[in-house]
Image (tube, rainbow, N blue to C red; front, side, top):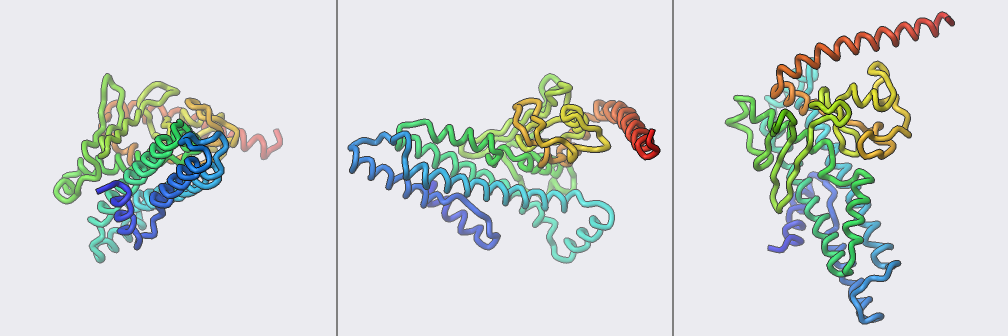
Length: 319
C-alpha cells in the first residue's frame, strides 16, 4: 500500500478526535499541476526561482498544516501528562473518575496514539518535501524543513514528545504497569554513555530520535530539566542564569529578546516546558547525582530567595 493511501486511511480513523493533518493528497496534486505547467510552457522540469504555484500555494498550505498538527499534538500531550502527574485533590478526583469509567488503560492508549500521530505526520511531511525536491530538481524542500525547525513547528522537535518518551519508560519501570501497558515505542530507552544520558528511540520508517540530556551550560546531566521552544534542554537554574533572571522570578519574567544559549534563537523562553516526566526518570536513574544536586541547589535557592526579599523590603521602605 502506498504511503499516501495509508496516511489518508489513518487520518480518517482520527476523524472523531478532530485531529488536523497534512493534506498529503492535495499537496501532491499541486506538485503535479506545477509539473504539467512547466512541461507545457517551458518543456522542462526545472522550477523557476519564483514559482507562483509552489510559492503561492504549496509552501503556505504546508506551513499552515504543520502548525496545526504541532499545536494539536502539544496541547493533547500536555493534557495527558497533566492527568498522569496530577496530585492532591485533583489526583483523587481523576483516580475516582478513571475507576468508574475504566480509563486508566485508556490513558496509556492515548499516549500511544499521540506518538503514532506525531510519527506518521512527521513521515508525511518528510515524504511530501522529498517529492517536491524530486519534481523540481531542487533543495528547496530541505530548506523549508530547516525553516520549519527554526520556526519550532517540526513535530519531532517538540519537547512534549520527549516527555511522552519519559512517560513510557517510567511506566515500564512500574511493576503494576509492566503487565498492562503496551509499548508506546519500539526500542525506547534511557542510555547512559560515559556518564552522559540520552533518550534513544528507534521508530519505524528509519526515523530515529536521540535526545541529549546533558545541559550545555553546566555540562552535566540536566537537573530539574526545562526545554525551550527551540527544543534544547537545560537545567532550570542554568536556564534562569542564562536569561539573567532569578529562580524566584522564573522563566516567565525573561525578556523576549533573550536568546537560547545553544542555537541563539530569540523568544524561546516564553513557551518553555518543565519536563516533569523526564525529571522523574532521571532522578530514578541517577539517585546519587540527584541527591547531590538537590543539596547544592537548595542552598542556592535559599540564597536567591533571601536576596530577593531583602531587595523587596528595601524597595518598600525606600532605602
